[in-house]
Amino acid sequence: MEPVLKAESLVKRYGNVLAVDNISFEVYRGEIFGFLGPNGAGKTTTIKMMSGLLKPDSGSVAIDSRDSRNSIGICPQHIVVWENLTCLEQVLFMGKMYNMSPDDVRTRSKILLESLGLYGIKDRLAKKLSGGMQRRLNIALALIHSPEIVFLDEPQAGLDPQSRVLVRDYIRSIKKTTTIVLTTHDMEEAEKLSDRICIIDKGKLLVTGTSDEIIRKNGNEDLVEIDVDCDLSKDFLPFVNPELRSALSISGNRVSFNSKDPLSALDSVLKVVKGRNLKVTGLQLRKKSLEDIFINLTGRSIRE
Image 1 (cartoon, rainbow, N blue to C red):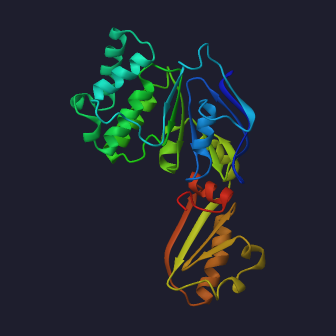
Image 2: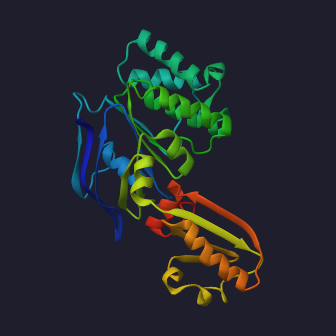
Image 3: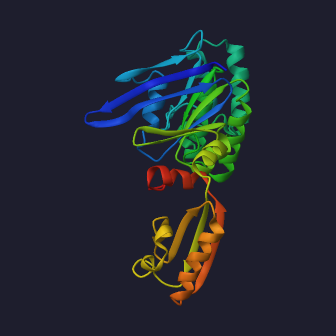
């Protein structure tokens, strides 16, 4: 399958800060490609370079389109609306900027506003909209000209739960005709929305694939978490089998570890717990999640 968008060895610096560090990836037609990473990871800078808003210091971006300017839609992270125009006036004006015919822009405007739950307030001024409504309006503005590729930078930021579901369902519904590149620091949304995900942190692309592929390649061990009735930080590790000791992580009253043979390792840890006269208050055995993988790759939670 030929990529519709290809980035090769992208680098961007802001002074002494290396914001994007030699990343390469491909996006295929009709997929939802998600950039997952914490704030400051380099997601927005990468989006700007891909969409032509920012020139990379080195590297290249290739877009497979006859008219790259009109084939791209951009929904920025920060809301951009004309405060003294109504919802309908906003999308009509944007459509005219793309040289859409009056009939086409009116038809398209109605479809978008209805799909994004804004048609009932189409005559309300943008400055009187809630932040979530303005976010949905921004998405409509990015899609008015039916672009082949749309870049959505944190499209669900500031949305209430009901609006998040509405936007998520709408994004899924347009992937048949539109390739979608989105950024998010929300692990759950990345898994629910994206066909493929790349994890980015400190400007580096760490891993790319479907959620299942990433977990399978990086998480072939089970995660065990044991909670006890006191702090373990001082007097626990010295009593653990040396072969297992390096695999354990202690945080307060919780000990956790990854293992391909979790039951055997669990038995060893519980013997130490019993020998120290500690009481188990919680026990969990589960497969690794995408967030566990992120923590393993970066050494921190995505929310830090």
